[in-house]
Length: 367
Length: 265
Image (cartoon, rainbow over all chains, first blue to last red; front, side):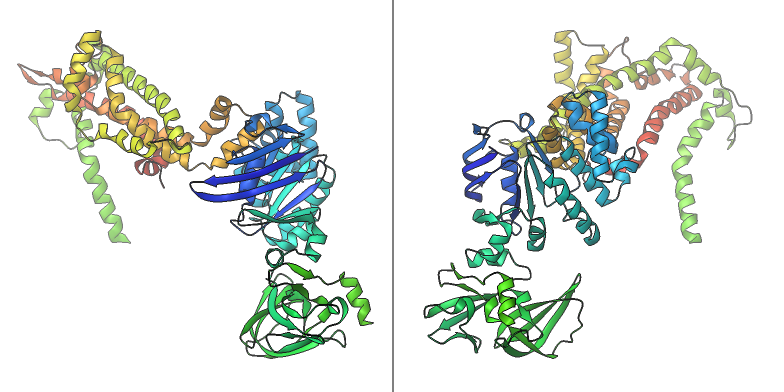
């Protein structure tokens, strides 16, 4: 049961937007579509909704082929990145509109609209027009209209991207609760790995029109199948360093040696790409195994309650992520520590060879 | 600041002077007009207006004009709305060319089309009917209406259409209940442009009518007679011709600039 995509291609004017996408969406599950801009997330949502027709392949809803079926006859609700409401109707009418079209009795419409409005804190605003609302309230209205319908397929295309930081966090928490209660397929697209992790559920990683990896979100985060997945699923970008491994040590091409401990211990000799997530660089030593890199800060930026420190080591630009707001001057000397047990190892063909064990085991190893 | 103020006032006086002078003349008798130069009429009379409103050959001219102008505006809007929607939302073979060449009708002066219209309407027995003039003016107004409305419609995000279809709206219902209210200003401006063209166009309107549907502009030429020109009456008729236009402009004044840019601002 649910929605199934079979070998979907979408080509528009010679440009491939989607290539060979096959996915299975189960009813009652949450899916996060993660990919950068132009990854094909919106194209995929539009095909799932029935707004666009795939150039090749089939869309099956509950086993029935619905590939060419008009969007009007499908059970779909969608929320766009832009705040899309009917500007000439009040918030109440906006939310009620799908129910009115479906011919729901008046009392029932009122009950359901009020219920949804309560869920999204829109009650005091019901008689206003969308133009009289703030951005967050407009998007809440759009979300309410999508929720009130109780469609089998709920699609959200980067719904929070145009909202300010505070509002986004608030609404994301609420959405998580709301999604949990729904008996439909919920698909949520985002470009932000952090948002994907917060939403949990299942993840679909997309890149340039292809699906790279699918699976439970945490599992994909901990075991990215390829370097590309690791790149898409980390922000700031994961640091890749080529390393030569012999019997005793991994010689990173930036002139540091890592001991082969923990998950690295039975790594066969050869050339690998080591991936170090930015938050796995530390400014303080955490274990005796930590390798120290002495370097100077190139640039430090503060992002919310985190600080990104960009530094250069032997002509390689690397980035470190640290909790809290920290002030660094450009050119300031710092010691950066990296734990061998945090390193992802990819082969030369970009496929994952070794992933760190769960972060917990790394910590206990330190004790 | 003061200087700019002065220039503006001067410009305004320059603009208003002919209109004021017409108003001035319309409130005086012919003899009075010919006798003396007066900035403000000393002996005011409403005789000219009374004549226009009481003589059916005069006021029917206004009624005729209003009838064919309204018919024309309605036909132009009803045909241009779906056309503009198609041009703004769908891609079809030759859409851009068709859209551009629509305007060719406005590239020629109306007189060019006079003869074909006259012959065509004679054949169909449409001469001297309101619909004849209204249809003839559509040749110029429909393309303009399509252009203006397309501009306004393209300013409405396509996602609104899609959301409506996802919500289950049928196309006609979406168009009437959701889309039309969104481009209200555009429709108003378009109606204004159709109205203005049709209202002031004289050549086609006069040639295609004789008596029953005679427009006011043609009636006004009656003031020329063997005994000379009836200045006062002509001025009064002129003032009354400005009134409907001024009213329409008042209603769309906030959207006019956007309309002149064909909705593309």
